[in-house]
Length: 394
Image (cartoon, rainbow, N blue to C red; front, side, top):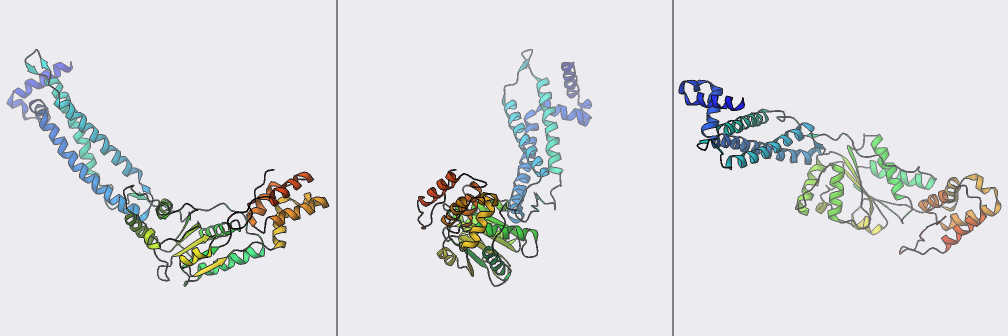
C-alpha cells in the first residue's frame, strides 16, 4: 500500500494542475530535488545554532552574577537542539548515498518521498524551538537561596573560649575591621570557634548577605583557593582559563553578592587578594575576610586589622572538659583519678586532644588501660611546632 501511495503522489506531481495543493507541492519538491529540502533544514539549524550560542553567552553571564544551576527548561531546550544536530548529520549521510533504482531505470521516488517527509517533520521541530520565547526576560539559572552552609561542631565550653568568641564578634560587627585573623597552635580550637560564628551568622541575617566557608589546608595554593571559592559560589572554570580570568570572574560574582563574610580556615601561607579575585573589604562594601592560621606572621602578611590569639585552656578548664568526656563514674577509683589527671595534663590544654582522648577513655575502669594511655602520651614524638602528637591506640 505504501508503494501505491508513492506512485499516486508521483502521478499527481507529473500533472501540473494537480500540484496546486500545498501539501502535494511539498511532496513533489521532495521527489524532484531532495537536496534542496535538506539545504533548507541546514539553514534553519544554522539559525538555531546562533540562538544556542547567544543563550550560552547569556547563561555564562548569569552564572557569574547569580550562581546556581541552569533551569530545567533551558537544559531541555539545549538537549533538543543537540538531537536535531544529530538528525541533520544523519540526513546528509542518507542523501549522499547513491539512489537505488526502480526497475533499473527510475530513481527510487518512494525513498525520496519518505526522506522528504521525515526532513519536513524535523524542520517543524526546528521552527518550534526557534519560536520559543521562554527565555526572553526570564532567568536562565535557578537562584541559590541559601546564604551559606551550617557546619557540624561541638559546643563552646569554658570561660576562655567564650571570651575569645566575644572578642571575635566585636571585630565582626566593627565597621572599621575588614580582615580578621584568628591564630594559635594546632588543636587549640580555632576551627570550632569560627564554625560557631559561621552558624550564628546564618541564623541572623542582619550582618551579611552571604557567609562563605573555605578550608585551605597546608597544600593550598592560589589555583586551589580560586576553585574552592568558586565551588562554594556555584561557579566552574574552564581548564584553559588563566589566573587573571578566574580572578575576574570571582571578583565580579562576589561584588554582586552584597555584604559577604569569606571564612578561610587553616591558612598556612599568605596570598594576594587581588590575584585570587577577592574584593578588598572596606567600610563601604561591608565585606569581611576572616582567616584562621597557626602563624601570626600569616595574619600580618594578610594585613589583618584585627587579630585574636587562641590560647590553650588553663589547667582547671582543661580538667573539667576532660572529666566531662570521660564520665564522672570512672573517677570512683582514686588510682584512676590520679592517672586521669596525669593523662589530661599531657594533653597540654589543647581542646582537641582533651576531647579526642577523653572520648577514647570514656567509661574505662581498667587501670592498666589508663597506664597504657599515659605511657603512649609521654612517649609520643613532638611535631615541628614543639607540641606533642596526641595519638592513642586503645
